[in-house]
Every structure is written in C-alpha cells, then in structure tokens.
Image (cartoon, rainbow, N blue to C red; front, side):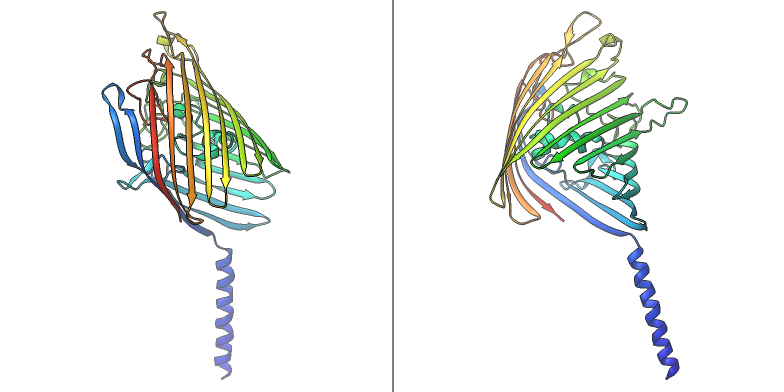
Amino acid sequence: MVWRQGRNILGGAVIGALSISAQAQSKVTLYGLIDEGIMYQSNVGGATGGKKFSLDAASGIQGSRWGMSGAEDLGGGLNAVFTLESGVNINNGAFGQGGTAFGRQAFLGVSSSRYGSLTLGRQYDMILYFGQPYTTAGMVGSVLFDHPGDLDNTGNSIRANNAVRYMSPDFNGLTFGGEYSVGGVAGNVTASSGYSLGTAYARGPLSVGAAFSYFKNPTSATAGGGFFTDNANGATTLAYSLNRGYASANAYQVAVVGIKYTIGSVELATSYSNTQYGNLGPSLLGGTARFNNVDFSVKYTYGPSLFLSAGYDYLIGKGVTTANGRTVGNQHYNQVSLMADYFLSKRTDVYAGAAWQRASGTSSTGAPAVADITNLGDSSNNHQIVVRVAMRHKF
C-alpha cells in the first residue's frame, strides 16, 4: 500500500515535470490564407493580345499562402522566433514567388519587447513596414491598387535574400528598423549586397513613415541571386516595357514617404516615392533612370462589415539618353482604382474591385508606352482595365 502510494506520488511528479517542460517548449502556430478570384483583363498580351478571363490566387488583397511561426521563451523577456511562409497558387498547386518553396518569408532570430528583434533569412525590406502602409496598396491591398509595375516595391514583389534585420520596439509611437542583405560574392564583399532603413511615428489619428532601400548589382544571371532575380526561377520584375530597358542597371534605390490620417470612419493617406535605376549600361551611357510616383487613397468603413476604398496614382518617368542620341523612358501613367469588401465573418470576406490605367510617352525600350497594371503584362495599347471578383478565407 505504501509502495503504491509512493508510485502514484512519483507518477504525479513526473507528469508535473513534463507539463512544465512542455510549457517551456516552442509554441508553433500553423496559419494560412486563400484569396481566390475571377479576373478580367482588357488589352492584355502585347500587340497581338486581347481580352482575358482567368482564375487567380496571387493578385488579390493578399496573396494566397500557408506558413508556420513559433516562439520559445528563453527567459529574461527574450524569445527565440522563426517564420516559414510559402506562397501558394491553388489553381495548380504550385509554389508562389517563382516556385520558391518558402518564398514569402523564411527567417530565424531573437525577439525582446524591450530591445526589439534581430532576425536572419529571406525577409521583407523596410519599404513594407514603413513605406507601404501609406500607399494605395497599403491601404487596401491587391494589384488593382499597386503602383504601375511595382517599381518601388510597395506591392512587395521582391524580398531580400541573405538578410539580417533589426526591428525596434515601440517608443511611445516611434518605431524604426534596418536591414542588410549579404551579397555572398567571393572576392567582393559588397557585390549584390544592399541595405534598407525605415522609421514611422503614430500618435492618435495621425501616422507618418519613411523608408529607403539601396541594392548593388540587382540583376544576377544566377537564379535566386541579386535583388530583382531573388526567386527560385530567376524571373525578374524588369519583365515589361515600363522598365525592361533598365536591366543593365548596376544600382537600384527607392525612397518612400507617406502620411495617414483617420477621421471617424474615414482613413485618408498619401505617399510619394522616388525610384532610380543607376549606372546603366553603355547603350544608355551609364545614365540614371528616375521615376517619381504620388498617390492618394481613401478608405471608408460602413458598419462593422463593409469597407469601401478608392485610390488615384500618378507615375512619371524621366527620360534617359541612348548612345545614338535618342531619349527613352519619358513616360507617364495615370491609374484609378475602386474596391468594395464585405466580411461574412471574422475570417471570410468577399470583394469586388476594378482598376483603369492610361499610359503616354515613350517606354524604357524606346517604343510607345503601354499600360502595365502591376506586372500583369503589357497591354496591347496605352490603356487597360482589370476587374476582380473574389473570396478570401483565413485559417
């Protein structure tokens, strides 16, 4: 009888010890999102193209994805953290981000509520955290609200590989961060490297932010290397006439500033960005192609479930002189976007949106500028309409 009681006490002690140990282990969260819609595009596919209807899981308010994140309490307010997140094309089961298995995010590091976080891996740059929230895309999401060609990466077309990132805690509304991407080129420690900085301040209904990114040798012949060619298939964001002529750039930089103000149920925002493709090849005399973008957006909350949004964007490109004396890239883009989003529950919503864009001037290739709504493809002429009706579910 005594032995049996001892055994029960010992068993309880073991179970208690295991429970304490389990509580000290990493907490892992599996999560995901599916954003699937019917897309209509006018004048798509270049000069020989036409109208197009398709199912799409990548161009919605949020790209479809699944992932896992975790944190382990290391004591003293310090946590080990990680995230592995993959884009998913549910129409064919393929990975997003050019076939990159964990193309959205893949990082490991430490985090402290007092000192901030330090993480290493494939990560977003500071444009996402401190510039994008004030753009039309940041207010609403979806390629319908992204800037033409996503030249300034405010639509998150590109992630930084081999990146070391620091994010500060919140100092009474002030936050900041910095990131350095290691180039990994033997014999040249700065080749293909880059950095990104950002800061924001929020107080009451007002918030402001600014971010800057710079990358050397952004295009690489090796898939997964370079900033523009960061995905597994090596595809580049310099794919269409808006900026294809600048693939020889040896430097790329973006500066973004923005402001947002909330008045009751209405959010108003505006942003400005400057994008530069520097030290272009001999055919462009080593010049610099510059783009300036300004946008305005408004979002109205009608009741607890309905959101109405509108945005206007204007992009202007400064011309570059070619070796034969021509000027290319002096192009202008006007874009108007609208969206209505209705939530059926906390995790499921349906929405409909449309964008219209008109281009003028001369593209980076020297041909007449054509419409390009966020790299969905060159239009067959200087204007294009895209309509999307979709459903989004988070899990």
